[in-house]
Image (cartoon, rainbow, N blue to C red):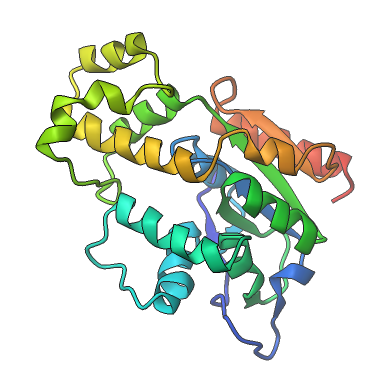
Length: 245
């Protein structure tokens, strides 16, 4: 299946000829935490995509906070986006609502997280559809360890190395942690990725999107541990036909 096709016109944060607010356009919004497989899913779809969450933070959120993206690790970015949410409870969904682009369909945004963002999008993007990808923390952590992105970086202190098992309490069973240790991942790398998963889950509870999008006919929930990206893409296409898009 094909790779993403870029949207022919750049996303804008002010009106421009030929563009409309995203809140008025049909849009497929992918929802899920880091490591659930959003990127693989959107690639399998092969549909035009807007700039992703990371770029939306870089271009819209960080400048309003007086910050630059260069040199920030994941945990620092979480702290900055938490500051943004203090004034903008809808989080990144509010930033997305400020954007304009040329009307095209299909059009994908990857992605929103948590209850507040999903609820804001449900209430303000009247023509949007939602695909929620779900996976437990241990699966997301292992995928982070395997994907090798420089972006997935977090500083690790000596104290955290000494008490790394405490970081996982309440999120991963010790047997799951032992299994990952047995896979040969460097301890410091494992701790760094564990910090990302822990910090993200503090800010965006995994069960939140289900609460926000419960009984919403425009929402499809997929278990990313039971369906691969290609099958998820096929299911999404079929579902959109079922709901009339």
